[in-house]
Length: 426
Image 1 (cartoon, rainbow, N blue to C red):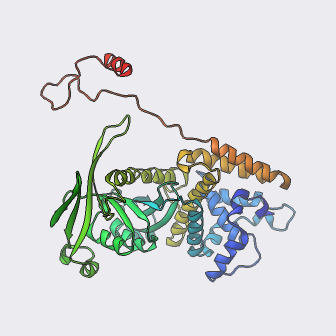
Image 2: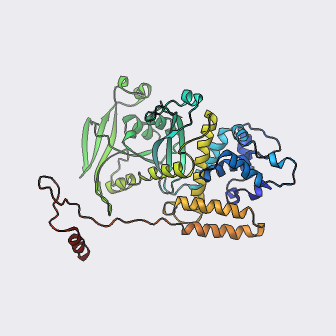
Image 3: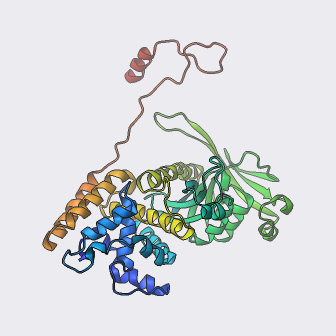
């Protein structure tokens, strides 16, 4: 009865047999009860798909889906936290990988970025995760995300304490990146060791160049395009001396410089470091276009925090914190899977509107007849396809100052209204 009415569209790609097989492979055993593996997983997804929902609200939601005539149905929803603690973390990891494979785009381009998570004040959190640097009185964790550039789905994640750097997380997580993938990141990942580890595994990398990098030699490939020879840093100055000693003494890195211009925005001068050394296969414009997608990772982190409950976590044990984070990532990927089923690029659809449409449809389908479910599912996909993002184009503005003769900027010799009239006439 619960499985018939709980999050019906999701059970098309998260079936009972599939989830129970994952739990059995992890050595998990359960008896005949309400909170078997699939209902527990669906309850976690429901909690992080509805902003502001607490564990008590999840228990009430489970009770509302149970038949009232069964004995003990009124108390059957009081064990959600205990059921979540019993379900192994590996089940959440398998579910995240499964939804990521369904929502992944055709091009294997991943965006990497990290963020901090605020945890409730608890002695165990201070011992396991440590204190946040900006908020000394609050414990915090560090989350590293690999998201798909074309769809925004979370492909891989790593959670650690505040004492761990993002570079250490990245070096530990790079083993999970498939061969042939291109990773795009900021300058904090543009290190000698990071490029060595990715090149050794057949992973492409496009990172912002660190201006403090001094190459040993430079060979020009064209205008604003060159190949530099980087020297291995001293092991006593590195945070990873063992890995530095295993790396070769030199490494070839291609440096591409260019100017990115977007309508309504100021132009940006970029210097990128990459291990894509073939200028014919990867011309400079293509490399710059890859890095132009990097800011999408910031938008994905914003959606995760504001829409899926990662702004402030509530669990008070390490195991529960990790499962809470994985549940939020799964709920985020579920929306991406439904967006992809519309046939439109998920980046063109509003994540918040699609999340709201999905939850409203799930609530309506739980009360509908079985014969009406296919029609409601098609209607939901049509609504998701109409939830398009409206791109706001900034009006053109004169990049000039009104009055400051000593400044090294263009001077505006006419009014702003006259400038707009001349711009539109041209």
